[in-house]
Image (tube, rainbow, N blue to C red; front, side, top):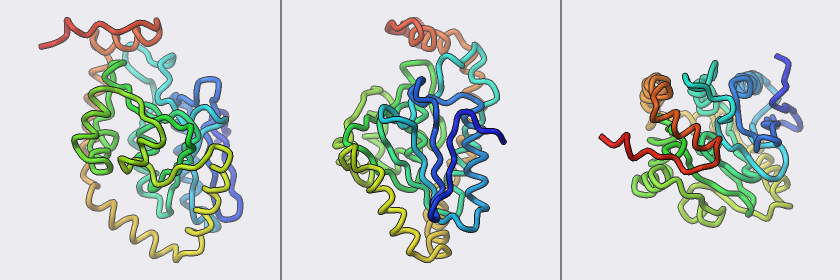
Length: 256
């Protein structure tokens, strides 16, 4: 598959997958998701790859979620994010999110789904769904509650606040925070440690931990089907329009 939105490199046992849309703060569109899925599938089968790193191009953003300019009245066309989430969780190799900047919305979900997250001290975390008429009804909500606890997960989703890297570390949302200039070297060191471990033992450990929350995949598939219907409503479209028009949304008339 020809790559336009993603950079892909295999080097020294590590597959580096980089969302390459810095002009859009690495927001993803349908093509981006398909390319990411193709790269994870390739890394899955590559016998000389023992660990995968997911990151974003530049130093401003890891990923800012779904590109609102690509969202139509019926939602995002040809974008099955649940497939990508499933690949990240099920690839039999550790996946590290190298969070080099904003991890917002669907981009925040991507780092949560990864096995490990190492962040720059300049990284910013948060959800935007209820602000723009969207939500992640699968791993982005239920699994986040497993990571940071239900009270904090509800705060993150309900209030759509943004959190610093230090706050993310304190709540257990990331594994480590380092200065921006040291981020790549730190992640390379984590990769080297992982590559020195038994790949079969790592695979079994990953699958054992996944088993406890695997039912969320089915919930997510059901939820995203409902989400496609929600995107067609006036309520959801008000959120998208407000974002593009750079104004606060008016959701008051939709309270039932």
